[in-house]
Image (tube, helix red, strand yellow):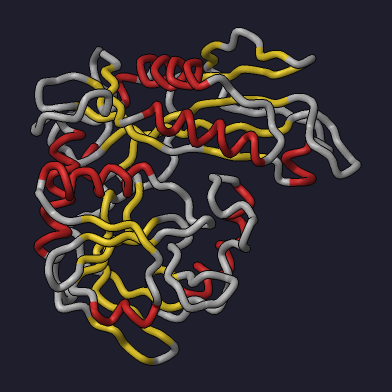
Length: 341
């Protein structure tokens, strides 16, 4: 299919409406057969549960054009499982995992002309989401739900190269012990908005959240997991019951061990240890890895030896290897690449 007339090299990370999206309705205890629609609008009652009590969750993944011209998605099965886990935690109707994969496949296939060409650095962002749709006024779960998927072409997260960012230790808490930090609930992101706006006002790019119970251990940022590199080249990621299980982070840890031969460790990371690491990165779907050059703890600066000019050497190898797998330049582990067409 012929590509849309879009200036792929100047795309930002913003919403652009595409031709088709997927929708399925849950009512009377069952999901309907679902299907594609050209209507980008969602019409719900003013008292819909999602509007009153924030009963909603979402996922995010990308579709790429590979070196050999195929359109692929990266590990959508893990997105399907994570959404199912989130729905269970929020007492929502679970959209079946196999249907999730079919829905994102159909949505990307229907919008294939919006998938940026290979080499552009851009991708088609895929956003599945689920919400309580019937009118609720008492505090209780909804009885009806909508599962939807839309797509939008997005530009490369880093334009002109991945420059290390400066983050601060945040005074706000992201997630409470035994709360919802481990699931991708919309309410988690709503709670982080004030903190990120405040960080930007203070001149920082992101927040480093510490654990809410003791405020002594590193957790994550508002939308990404941490990766650290030790002086002897070990890749370390924080472990906590209130951290979202990032698909990108899990993939990078596998790449570090199996492709690059590095030692890896998932464990609690005391904040006092941060100053001992040589590299730091934030990992997630949008950027894969955002390098961190500096952490500011209430005026005290922790500067990583990797510096403020470019990714550190280990972080760069991780980034290059994972993006090479996604783009079809490096052979992927079995099951990681879902071919759309």
